[in-house]
Length: 365
Image (cartoon, rainbow, N blue to C red; front, side, top):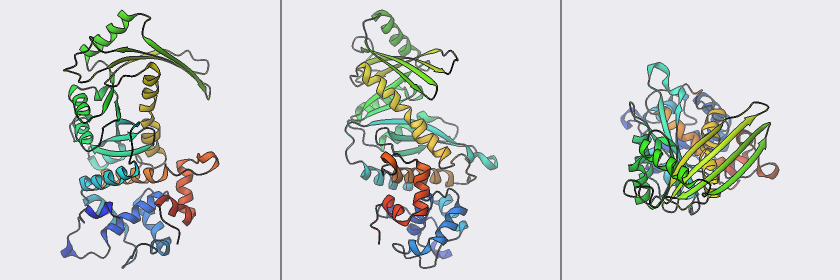
């Protein structure tokens, strides 16, 4: 409630407002927490749980209509909502000294209905904690590169390792992370041909001398073999172009499913942190956690791509709302060995008032 109080109510007072703006936002958070991903379901859940909500909300005129919820999310300033989210999320993680921050984008496919151009959101994901720290919408007729600097500027990067795929391998982005006190890990591909040639040549010249880490893993009929190697960047990379660059890396990986013969894949990296081969392998795996621990989660467990909400600011605000709930649910261990799935956790919140209060950090009345 404290984080939400700095968001302006988008409704015009002269038209009369029956329902408290912050209470509407809290209801939606509670409803999505309880596995309700559409405004129709949110309203239905809130009406059934009216007495429980009144334990900490006034609800002077009852539960708002579905149209009221939708209107709020269409008109609410997403920048203010995002600022409130970052303030709240920052409070969840007071110390991030050894954390890795993965930056990557996701298209909200359902937002293209009605002839509207699909929206694309870039998120910052703390890979160890499994929490989202911020998001930034990519402007129409642009790409992730334009949204990344604004997202980075809003975050405290000191001491963090910030990782990107090849899209984020840009001199300005590396310089910004370095200036903000963080370290970067950038995948190098053909969009930076000169840098790619330098890194490739360095490992060819080094032959078998780089420090190496090998790893093999079998799971569900799949076998993955990974070989990571690192070299010092000194004397090889232009430090003015890539500030603070300390490490060059290459990872060769083979993925084989069943009896099908796999193919080796090679990926190159640069980093401003001094990394061992083991460190590089771990950080590269951690970066791709954003795909299955955030993007996949939003699609499969929060039905983001299936949403029919597509007008005004609603898709952007609804995407952030689901990330708020993910941050509420993920840190709370439940079930055998604390490994209950996200889907069952949300259903448990819907079934049990005490479980819901636990996720929200409330003392059960």
